Length: 412
Image (cartoon, rainbow, N blue to C red; front, top):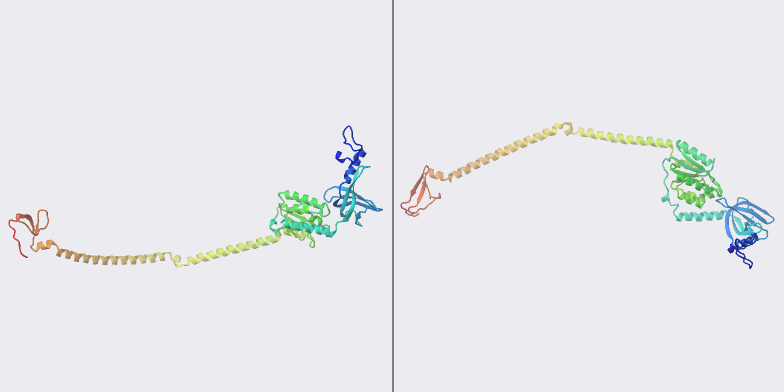
């Protein structure tokens, strides 16, 4: 605790055998806290009273159960807006003050004013531009809604008109639709935290296919929770499609920008999330009629094609094609036979002529005319012989062996 010791010559280090007095600890705490600076804080006035220029009250956190006491004395120079009351959302410049007498810590008000509409609009616009820059509003990241959800998660105020509108209209369109309803605050500083918790619960339920956040309109201040940065980022991080049905046309909360679908009203959300069973039955009937027409048209076209094919000559008389081919084959056979007969006759005549020519040149015909042929002992024809040469004389009917006793040359 020596770091809390007052800056004096009497300060000393505390120990078990040399403890501080309570007053000494209080003075040290006061000296240390007095050196702390001032800080701007935003919150809700939980209690607020003013009497004789003195102001006392408490400032509550906007999201969690946490509060601090605040005060301001007359002639302290504090700049406090007139007309503040309990429940107002304010911004205050605070200085911590420690009271040694009772050990109480409070916050001295240096300045305090109500959060104005212009300031809130400026904050929302700045957050909007930041969300756009981060791509959280990009249409490409929007998740499509299921055609017929298994179960719909609904976050809305308890017994609100928005809840009744969605449940009634959804069941009118699709009587078997199932809902998982979580009632939360839908305005005030604690609404955003409750809605965030409900979103997490519904997103973790496997049977829930789509989530609707609904409220039946309201003033700009009433809709502020739906522009809360924590809620908007939680909505953008959901794994399931989200439908924003705040029901306010003039002032669009930031939740509309990151939601996968913005519905203009809770009733519109019911129409967008579930199909109309009557309309779907009409569409189904129309589709069946179209399918039947297409099938019937196709069958009729095929029947006409079959009829057309059956009336063709080749199918009207299946043997006509065979008869025509048989007639063609008979004609070709006759033609081939004529060609062969002609070729045989021509060839026979040629052979006869060749035979006559061969007969005219045949040695046998010469022998029949009385001539003879001389052959040597080797079987070769000879036209000249020498004396004492042996040879054979071939006549028409005989082969005569002879020898040349004398040879006389003749002049031709």
